[in-house]
Length: 266
Ligand code: NAP
Image (tube, rainbow, N blue to C red; front, side, top):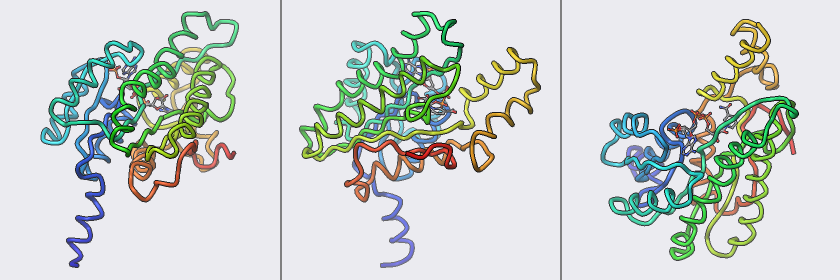
């Protein structure tokens, strides 16, 4: 086989597959969507705002499409999953990436903040999985990748609600992985450390506002938690997801894979 043919084969490993990436319009989700398109998949990106989704779709209109839904609303998710299949067919890969991170001291975390964190991070993952899993079981093949966080594996001060929600996502991942282990479906979590996206920029702005530190000082503080002394890039998280979606990762299930320069080890 020629070098070109080998390269083509290596980059088209997900040809014929339809992936749904929630929160795919920005940050880590957009990087994941593009990585899966590169592997030959057709990808539906889902979010609440159409505009960022459409600007991503414009990069690859043949293989990307957008649907709007709030993942915390099961009825909206079901409708979006139905819409997604009209053009691209049954869904084989689900990346539950939509998420929000809010920080506050525990005693200032009221019930509404707790609910917000659980609604998007846990119930969102739950709703999308409930809507898509039956198709995977019917096909006898599927990949579910939940973008949790290092906050799903270890604790951090001032983010109790986010941490509780992401730990729950890891628990769901492990439990469901066992339930579907014999059905050709793998379920894993990818757990990034601080990653260069809007969520991190908001966290830095929050620290600046609350402590009076400069932006550079706040950024350095976030990088310091990573033993490599740097912020993770979205493409690094996306590459781990891409690998988990491929045939070669068939034996990897129920795992929480940290992408964080060694910040957590478990
Ligand atoms: P981001 O750029 O803010 O992306 C979050 C995405 O989720 C947005 O596209 C947003 O789009 C979507 N989203 C939020 N709430 C939603 C809802 N209720 N329904 C549907 N979509 C919703 O941040 P990111 O850093 O890439 O975050 C992606 C994931 O990585 C999250 O689960 C986050 O917890 C996790 N993570 C991030 C970091 C980090 O340091 N950046 C570290 C660890 C884990 P709309 O606003 O249009 O809905």
